[in-house]
Amino acid sequence: MKLPVPNNMVGRPSEDSLVRLPESAFAVVAAPDAEEGSTTVEYALGAVATAAFAGLLLAVLKSGGVKGMLTSIIQSALSL
Image 1: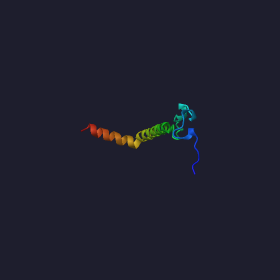
Image 2: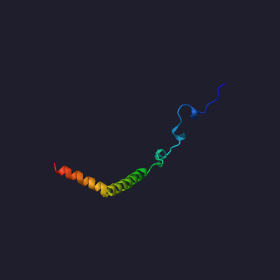
Image 3: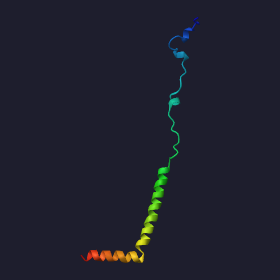
Image 4: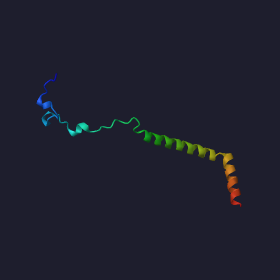
């Protein structure tokens, strides 16, 4: 048994029956990134680690034993 179908439901819907959404309804909104700003922190930590390593290296190079060893290496290189 076939049920009667109203005229406005046969085929394609009429323009009047369609709901119009504004174009902004389809705009893609980016979700906040959980790692946003992590690059800046990584650079800051790298700079601090580099400064600490440079300070440690400077302290070692200024010590008496290393200073004497470097002096003897440089003198022997210059005497060639």
